[in-house]
Image (tube, rainbow, N blue to C red; front, side, top):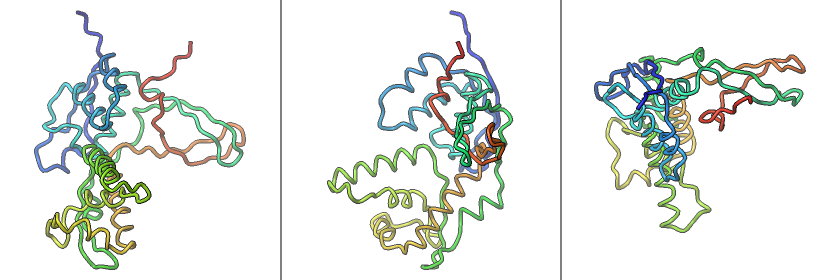
Length: 252
């Protein structure tokens, strides 16, 4: 049977330096097939695992780690590269000017998007810090697609057990999955959830903000600047993953 796949190579933004194992940052990808798209469209309770399974299936090299356990920056990067090798570099954009409200369209070259690479100093700065109220020193772990699926499952299990859908536990499980150590020690699993519940909101806000910053240190920079075709003013926007990402419309 003829092989019509397209191959491409890329280097992980983390360069493999954020993992506790040896990871080869040089990745070779093949384009998606119809069978891969069928997997993507299948119903699932673990959407990140579904996408990571597709990425792994399309990875021709062996990085030594599943994309399901990669930091979010590397995962996002591979997702964009998979889209690029499957459908090409051009990605249509559509948004509205915040000043005049007019619609603007453009075509973005995915290949030229800036890449935020691993920086040891920044990584250490945002992974370990002191909380402002409790004065506890916490170390955060980079989030992964596996952890995001886990948080979603924990939220659903909590609501199922308690029957209380008025209490949103997402912030609780986000922190329990973010914090790796407290004052240099791993948290006691028996008392950890209560520790988070009793945490001053100022400390909670710090953990979430630092966690978001840590996750955004690595990967594709999706911040964009556009000029309105109608009023001529420039405005900030960002690259959104729409239906066009996995199945671009054809101008026919």
